[in-house]
Image 1 (cartoon, rainbow, N blue to C red):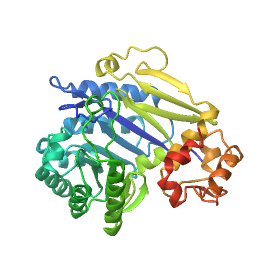
Image 2 (cartoon, rainbow, N blue to C red):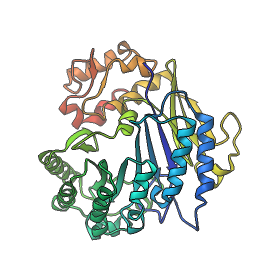
Image 3 (tube, rainbow, N blue to C red):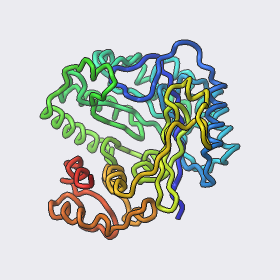
Length: 376
């Protein structure tokens, strides 16, 4: 059975860099040549194109909603000409809740985007200021209403917790507002201090570990009580899961186009990973050698690193993955993992039904880092 294939598209520009962000994003210093960048994206795709259908597209950033709907339409039309998109293709665009972006929502929907991921992060004014966000609470709330009016039935809200000085009550206030808006999907993840960010250089006062646990437990209970099912460590759904991210976690393949985008392809158990030039200027020069001039590196994942790679993704899922995916999507068999799995089963961390499915127990899910360390 062919391994599913997705497409990630990176739009690297944003209005300003948030202090916690370690993504490949670059503050605007003038007008964006949208048409020029779209031409490069389509040329990049033409070099990497695979005959398998593209089952999902995720347009991330940066702030993709800085691009006009006409540019997004031209991009999707160009992709469809190169690789006809199935009617079932999930097409997600990340958007900020600001008024400027909201004005484009209906046109994005008309362009073919069928899922919107709105970067709210918090509804609290002080937290939004601390996080460097440029929208306010009212804009975040209004964004959901405008997205629904524009025809989006599939909406995700991005929220963070363990924010500077945050307590359980503050985190729950954010979740109460989020669930009151009733989006299909909520991504709720913990703020971490990543290298090469302003927060890493000048760390804010974050909640201690006990408070972080209290927030997580109270927040999880609230989401469950309001009809959201956790299916991944930071993903909760009241409707359909995010098919694009699900493909990552199930160790599917994906193409990556745009500045700094990453890709993964599998051929006969040989897994290769690649990345594109990170700097927008270098990417658009397409100055590399080899079959794709936008690519700055490509390497094969060694067989002895595949157990950790596949488990790092698969065990993030509450339901894990079918055991058959091991030999379908890697060079591994169950026998390669059996000794490690046996130890984890004995510790009550892995579900013993490993012949059919690889998944953690509830205890293992709570101690996921310990489980993953066993595969290193």
